[in-house]
Length: 491
Ligand code: C2O
Ligand code: CU
Ligand code: CU
Image (tube, rainbow, N blue to C red; front, top):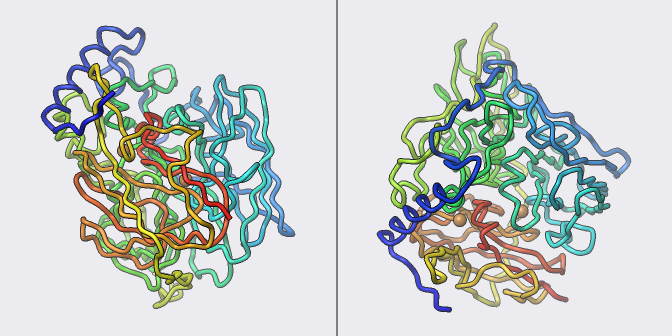
């Protein structure tokens, strides 16, 4: 079988072909995501006050939780058959401290296998830890144990299923939750809010729409963009009173280009890790999986929409904009995520700090270099594949073998006409240089957007946590289609 890189023109033709055969051959949702369809569910909770998922906090160094994944969750003001943890989407917010033990009994009440991943945590990937190779069958449960290292950075992380082949389906169906690591010194703010952004498409009966082949090749995007499961909620604020927003991009494929009308976004953390100092930005770009912590100082009384600007991750070049649903990120219209409503007298708030407790960046120089290539290619008979180094995912194969204790430099190259967000489990990396020329943060992160025909150079310390895990494209349809590799860090 020969695989060859394909041109944009050929890609277009093949995707068109894919659309035609899907429409002809499928039953039920023959148009799939993106095309006009009957009776989409209209949100019933627009402009309600933003609520916070239930919080479960550790005490005396331990957090014991049971998470039951099952159909039935309230989304956009409707009781739907979307999927949740313990009956809600997002699931509970898990609050931990460095050195804590997190024990999760995951109960699978779905009709398909699932498992659990603690995205961004620098923890062991072995055994019943953050192990993406675990399978929890329908009706079964599994006891996970995550030991948070004593020197783990404080910040904003999240959890979601990671069972290869159904990750996008399960996240799109609602299975996500926030996970916070908290440590002193913490910031003095009036409100500390989780904003977990997801997107999905619901039919008139409250069922999550499945994605067709074309939508998966593009990376599906939902018609409804929700924050904590709510449609365009309101964030109440008073002038001058600083709020901390922990924004998590939990969408399966959507890139969020965040901005807040009338305000600067004061960025204090990326992917959970504090920056050395706050940075004022007009907008912050979040690939799927990325998080940012922001400080917002409301200016004057008024209503200020929190917007995701259009962002073309290469889907229009491939597809044209036909066939994309309402609120697709490439269609040119901004999407409102929430509205900050500022009212009341000016209140005094502690000043925004000038420095932040950024963890030190390991500076050991790399002892080996690798190059990884993300590509779209043809595997014969018109089937398009998403590959890393020319191969699709095989859980039995070790793609990268790394000696524990070493630091490596990886150049991740994207030869395809679409952006791919690159994510590595368990071992956060430092972006040294990137083709996009975006300013570097100088701190570690765990998802980096590799633009179409672009690249990024990463330094990754493998100083602790031996074991096998994965790296992949965080457009989770691409991951499910095989754009994932394995890494074995051995002692
Ligand atoms: Cu959030 Cu392997 O992913
Ligand atoms: Cu992850
Ligand atoms: Cu991708």
